[in-house]
Length: 369
Image 1 (cartoon, helix red, strand yellow):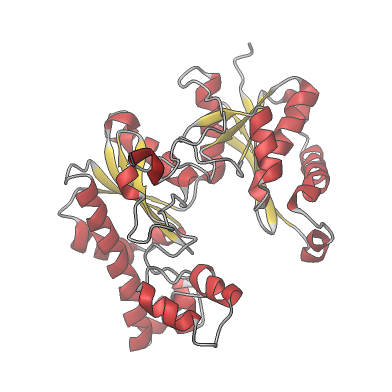
Image 2 (cartoon, helix red, strand yellow; image 1 turned 90 degrees about the vertical axis):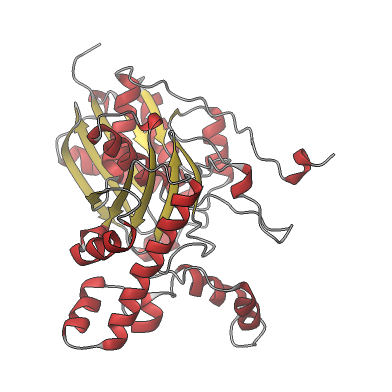
């Protein structure tokens, strides 16, 4: 095998497709291609976008002088899978089947496009820490409403990547560390990582999380019920309030933290209150996950775009610094995380996982006699 490992990372999003080329761990090229909303509306199903996005990728790479046959492997964002362990998965028939059947988000096209390139040129295709990663312990799933179970819906790809980086910084293996990791962005997710597994964490889709620029965060269930039956909102509007239109944007009319801080500097006390509330809630979640880890925490790790905010980091340290030292990786590393996962498998540092679709958690029945 050639000493050169060249990887193409593919990350389809709601309105864009990110692509990046890596060679021996170094990023050679990256581009976030925005799609015309009207064009995407032409496709009835997300799966129908396959050829459009695939051909766009081919066109971009050709213009930049890259040949698909020169890549060692192709790695996609992935999604649509049953809850699974974290890691790098070789794309197989079951991955493709579930990606096509559960095409709830364009990310599911990542595995399908990667596989199409791999099969054409006789190469490998992978997905890395897809959104479906769920490593919760049973006790973390239970709620007081029998019909509702807690689910792992967070920034798994980001969490796992910075967990690996933090462990390396400490001179340890990720599998030997306990971390509290927070991805702080438009939506903020936190998780307790114990010995390489996210044993408990937030649900940024259902609102079980801190308030964020576009997320309502955790709100008393009774108050939500009252609002649902107030006649003011329908189901779609309520979900949007929780997932997209809540949090800072609901209070201040903007999700831009820089704009919020500008208002604070100009004396806006309301903006200051909402900004401080966001920090306060993140710190509370950090504290709760310290309890999950029995206080045995190697580090609190921050990442995501808003972790660039030095004031926010400083305030979080004041509130939660007694738990463990902080390690901060500002920004996002999704494309690097995809490439790094594939690179570890190709170089033999990890074994590729085999996705079977088997569901480990089957509900309370397994505990009842």
